[in-house]
Length: 213
Image 1: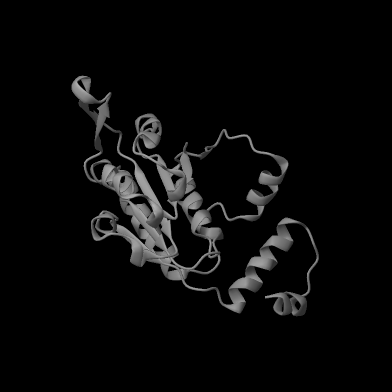
Image 2: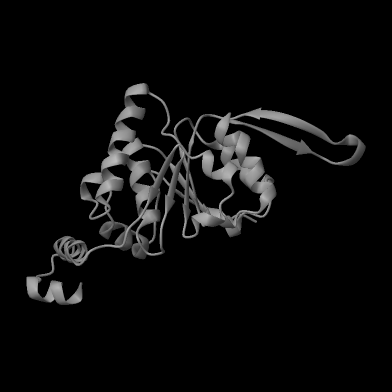
């Protein structure tokens, strides 16, 4: 069964989740590092807003621990959209995605971490959903089985991967926006610590921050 986490402006979270969320950037202006990604993403968001269309599907690639999930959440906030979070290994079959795809409102975000680990049948099911915002879903089986074509509200799929080379070409080609994350510099890490200290109202010395970074 698929595991999901839905985040919207009305979401209620635990104290620990609220604490963790409070340290993460909420807007692009608050993001530290990944300057090329931020700059290109800002342009894409402004263009989508002017066209009054959902943002193109986004692929975030790079080593683990560089903030791909955080970026996905920032994108959703910039769009004013609800984001549904899951991962490739958690999706066993196409039917697991149906209730999300049919419930999402126009412009909502579906984030799939480790998207390179989707099984082939689920991946192929997503092709039409991403390209045409429609899916063919089979009801029942055998003689009584039938296929229903279901129209979806336009949405943005954000995929994250640490192994982009494992993505098939048809899946990769359906992402209109693709970013590769770089490792953070020492200055970037020091700035992350500096901002976290300010949010927590903790006094910090520059020398100490530099050593930790």
